[in-house]
Amino acid sequence: MKENISIIGCGWFGLPLGELLLSEGFYIKGSTTTPAKITHLYEIGIEPYLFDAGKSDSENSTSLFDADVIIINIPPGRGSDEIISYSSKIKNIITHARNSKLLPKIIFVSSTSVYGNINGLVDESEMIKPISESAQKIADAEEIIKNSGFDFIILRFAGLVGKDRHPVKYLSGRKNVSDPSAPVNLIHLEDCIGIVRLLIENQSWNEVFNCCADEHPARKEFYTKAALQMGLEPPEFIEVTESFGKIISSVKLKKILNYKFVYPSPFDFK
View 1 (cartoon, one colour):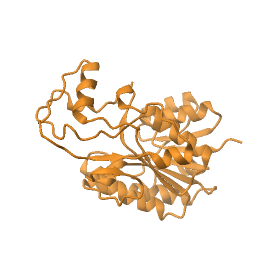
View 2 (cartoon, rainbow, N blue to C red):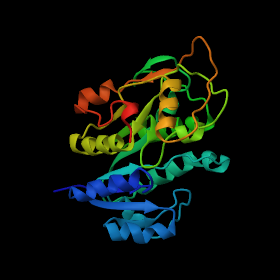
View 3 (cartoon, rainbow, N blue to C red):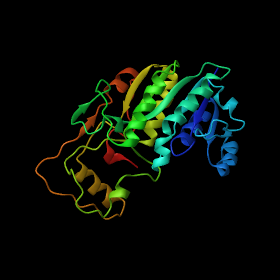
């Protein structure tokens, strides 16, 4: 019997993940904070919920958390108020999960930004050193999940690419971009979905996984080529003799799951 899965946050990643799981026979519940999306979720077969994790009294959301697996897929956001309130949102979700009729397991979508500006190869044993306020809040959320009493998986996704989302769009035409030879750490949407699907099947609970494409080309090489392929103006980098950066290792993920990336090289992203 396929599991009952709730996806908190049916957006860029959560929606196509839900669609794939539906196609494989899972029963999917999904939340959105946008009323206009409720009808679309219903039409594609996801049981829809209008749920705002920032509100403890969200109406009619109780059964959203009656699930075997709850996937928490809500980023801190970019506004200062959203970032400040992020920890309370995660705590609110955990409170709802504790009131579930089932004993759900938690998959939390985190970010490699929690590692901060570490140089060299980075695996899951590395002590995290978040720098930005947003990364610190994500790190705090990881601790909330780990100490929740639920079985959990924490997925530290690298930079997300796919379905009209590509970081070169933010760099196109910019001047004096730093770190031309620093490695890029990116992952394609299809691999994000594939990893979660395999983890649900594999049941590798109480683990933290880095999720990043195998190859790490230099920033200048990658973004120049990507801009030209997309018909955009390439960024202009500051020419320096040397620049450093972290290289996110997904060896643990590949070893435990025997996962093979659909897009092992960022140059192959579509």
